[in-house]
Image 1 (cartoon, helix red, strand yellow):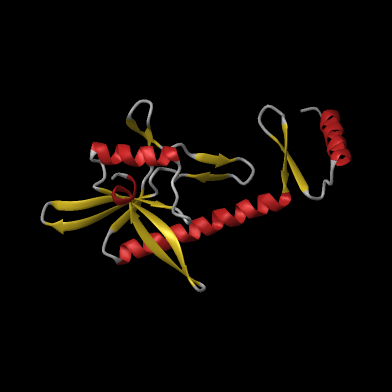
Image 2 (cartoon, rainbow, N blue to C red):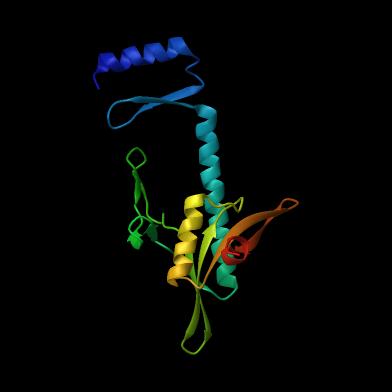
Length: 174
């Protein structure tokens, strides 16, 4: 983007509204996008809260005797197959997010010699899944990839946050 075009766009943004409450960034094609600074901060806080809760769920599953690992695959519903999850890269902070698969974790527990329980765990603070996520869970269960899929939901008890596990089969596949 040319420097004089950028100055002209910034001038228009300042004329249109309060530039102290908005932040402008440009995408790959040079198109400006304005975002409220309050919403940028809210998104940052929400991501951090979700990451902390995800860590708490992982520790809880490990305490219950399960071997837990990040699931790095996803489902392509159109093709009907498992594909590697796309990695997210932020060029400004030079951070690459690797664990973006669905569900978040795979948890394995030995039942007895030669038999294991393999479950998928999706971590959601509010416990709700989107339509696409429900379809992916159904696909995993129909193909027998996971014996169960749990949704880890945050439950408040005063100031303390507990974990409630919801079985996908019981709630959605009746």
